[in-house]
Length: 160
Image 1 (cartoon, helix red, strand yellow):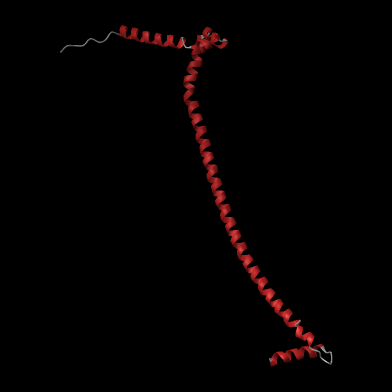
Image 2 (tube, one colour):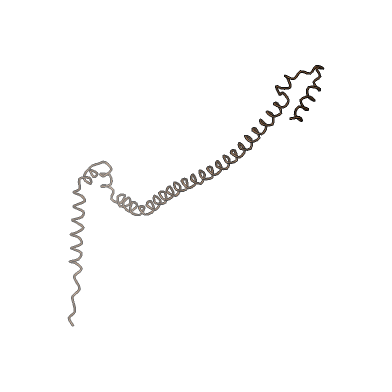
């Protein structure tokens, strides 16, 4: 068995250093980075590397809690929106059923009232026709007694 030699760590570090250098060079040559570094804020951060590192670490570490908070806000808003829709649907459904019950009750009351009015009209009409019959006025009683007229009228009804 032949033992393989472990790769030299200095070659790995050199390769890593070369890649990091290429990455840094590509970032520094970006036009937006160049414009930021020429600004007063970029020049201040270039003169204070500890503050720059602190801001970078803070930004990286706070990304997860801020993302979770924003997710919570979106989910809460979505739940509230759905809750409002469901609550509004429930209120509209209950209101519609209440309106249906009230309208059915009013229809029943209208039916009873119109029946009562029709029956009352027929009874009053019959009574008025009976009491104020035109043939009562055409009959002349020689005595001029109202009772005699009514009794004559009643006798006429029995004879018919």
